[in-house]
Image (cartoon, rainbow, N blue to C red; front, side, top):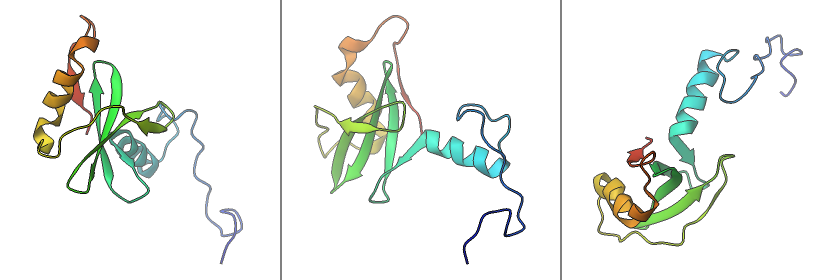
Length: 117
């Protein structure tokens, strides 16, 4: 049975003012937004591990026993990265590998690699 929240007798969820503002969110929506900021869901149901690499957002997806890197956009878009991550790099060393790979992008203000998940 389909219908709007009003016809089903359910109060509609409050509207979000801005995705970054939790001022009018329900606790469930707030939790979903926080989880979305940590993990980006893919079409295959896998999770992409997000990193802030000297100011660049990079996602790494486990795929076929290896890693598939992506550049992440601000609107949730992603594009294939122009680099590879060797299959033998363990998950806990991905940040270090990305730091070594992108060390020339470091600046005094952006001098670290952070795992966002």
